[in-house]
Image (cartoon, rainbow, N blue to C red; front, side, top):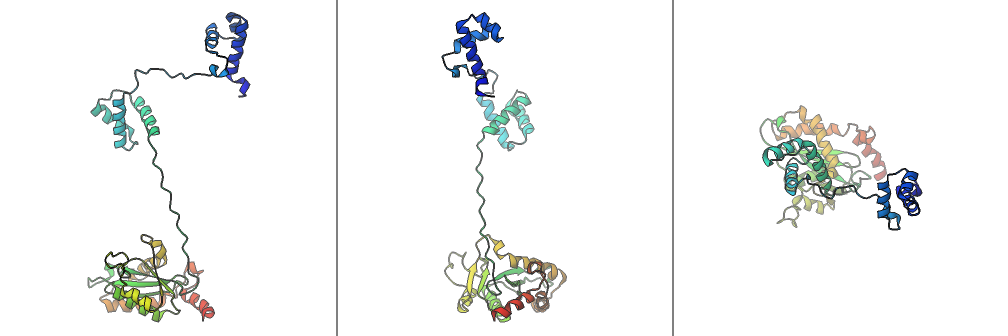
Length: 309
């Protein structure tokens, strides 16, 4: 609609014509009632703004909901989380003596819901990209897995220490009857002895078998595991709390070990478990992986050894 065809300009033309002619002539010319001509003449103050449409809302509404009824409706809707309107209406009728129709109740409920303050959505935290290792030994992920109770016959608890190289996925495992800083240190020594490459950095979670970081009293004291890393001049990296994805490679290896090894084995004691794990350990690094381009960890290690040494 162009600005000149707006109803207020038509009304202005009616008013100006009526100022020079009779109301009857104006009504006949513009095909409106005499009452309409009188209305626009009384409103006109020389500006087109005075000829704009006014609100048709009634000045009073005797049948509108009272403040008490609105409070009762809010309370019942809040109880049902603003979703189950029919139950809220039933309680209003039975317990609060509400006497209005369900249709009227729904209209009021929709209006109150639109006025309800909207909770601000929390901004999603942007996850910092994880820096992957560029060569074997640059970073080793270490974690502990509980040996499933269904494959242990003597009723004791055993633990598998696992180390996974981030670059080649080369994996080393040992089984212990306790997860402590002593076991962690012993595993580290054996890992260094068996690894086909020098280890530059070790990464773990914040478990007490690795670090005292979360212990308030001993947070500044180094564990046997941390002291061994310091003596061997190996960098130590602890992942942030509640970020197991940063240790995802060793976590994924634990799920694989569960499916390929523990679901098929039965162990009678620690020595028996260690012997069976050693056989699996020898084979596991020859299995191909899709993440390595259908190559095995041993193949990747050999590819880098020609460059590194």
